[in-house]
Length: 298
Image (cartoon, rainbow, N blue to C red; front, side, top):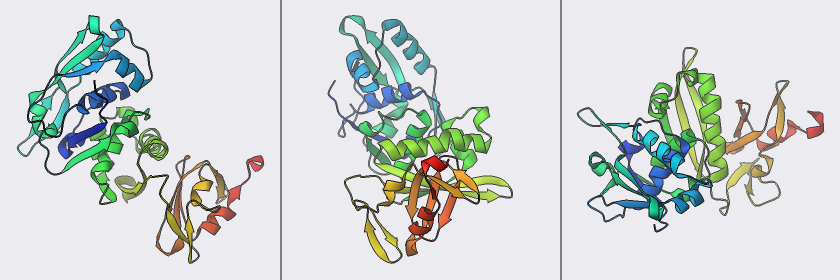
């Protein structure tokens, strides 16, 4: 198997409803990287067990592989169409060849419009950003935000996002969903991928009804600039705001644990998101830094 790394998917497939494990998603994406841009028909695609182990960082055996294939084939996806929807498996079949320690897979023909000859409204990204992610929800949110990367913002209803991700009932309580899905994805994308995000909550009454995702480039080699009291600060300077990730703050008498993201805004103000779930706005980076608590004070 050639180690191609680009995945291309139609936006409808990115927003399809399905629930897969992290390993299952990565297996499918490994297969998708083998589809060539010029392909008009699906081919049989090979995945060697050694390549799977290398990419996933885990040793496999045949019993485990068979259980894995059966479980994956039992999990269909639902794709919306103009006239209704399609329920399909990702693969028409998955074959294991023992002597060569490899899989061959054939994608379901119903997925052709979403994977072949893509002309517009498709999402493409590099698999290398996906492989370090440990949360299946983080992978899905990454894909969904890549669709809106150029727009830099995505609005989505909370109920719609939960439905797309097929979260269990225990995660349908918003605070639980925020802790186990949104905050985990926020941290993983920041650490491992080419984009990162912050999000805002819009309420209808007391209920969080809609989320606003703001999408940012996450290229460490680039200089990110923010305004600090009218002075331009570059991220490779001593006063870079990225230097403050992970710090603790005491705001309104409470300790907010582990700063995850500082989002620069026009006029020099900043929004801050913390691992403990709080989001705060500061008129300047200086005001944020005045709240910093030394580790020995915690």
